[in-house]
Length: 341
Image (cartoon, rainbow, N blue to C red; front, side):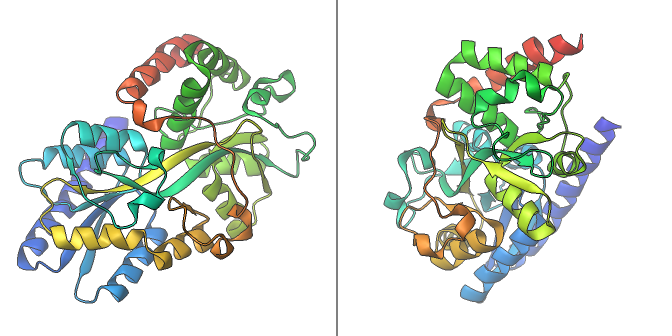
């Protein structure tokens, strides 16, 4: 069944891409965006772009980051997409390694922190996404809630913790990589084993399932990106509260890049530039609680939930390289499958 779903997913992406190829050959006033962003967000950001760039139409291919990376690889000889937007950083590092995204001088890039952009200018973070601890505030009080990452493995939280599987989630993958970079492999993998034991080796495959389990009280505490938690609390009235770890959140870049050989290069540049403008960032911050990567964005324009300064774990994302894949394999073999065997 899993293989069938993957094949069907690829067929959907292929079908959409074929349609894009036919349409984009007809008109140059198109920009083709590959993104894992959910429909509501990307539809609205595209509408704003089209309003500010009359005559250019945005065509979107939505799929998982993994499928989109595979798509870009398969199209290397004749690219169909123009922009890759959002998804976890490891994807962009791989795309850069294989020359599948191209350098571009972004206006105002000096305002983006060094660890939030590629020194070779192939990708730039649009948003900074803090990974934090959150909990069901009907079951856990602020005084009881974990204050830092290591509190997650305390005995009192046995079977009360639930997180995403890092082989299926960019946020969970970033969580594991961040702790390895901040703590070193020895301490981090000891923590991962204890965390796995806390959950009896059980993980969930999607954010919806994770949030549902926490809301229903099947678990009490978890780890997710800040924006998704505030959205769930404020838009869906879920009983959730955020706990910012005292040692720092793991702050992930959420990038955009121009695909190498983009068939609509001028429109692609305009789209990437637009993502970093004040109107686009204001929309993302106020409706979806996304922190702008640009440090010159006016703090008084941010919603109260994300206005306070954020302490971050010391993570050099640019130095991860292929280590992320190696660490994930080690976790799968030495922690997850070891527990299940």
